[in-house]
Image (cartoon, rainbow, N blue to C red):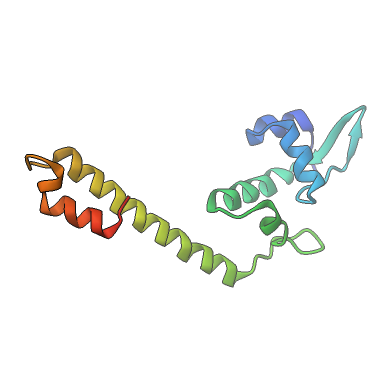
Length: 129
């Protein structure tokens, strides 16, 4: 078992030591002790931090992510919550694609004015952006 200090964990995970302390305060990670004033972690904390980063990228709050861990510290997310978040992301992606397509049309629209363009009128009425 390799032991890493807070600075090394922060560097390897690409986050600030203050974020690690915050995660520890929220119960997301746990130091195994200290070497002087520096917190020490098992190397496995890096996988836990990757999971936290994945959850944050998906739009989960830190409290949502904390609820995905068992009392023993194992990852055990609610599969229904994951499916619901995936559906939510699908909807966001669809909206962003419509917005992108609308912007591309506007950038390349051959009409004299955007308001005279039937496609632009459809975009406005769809509420794309």
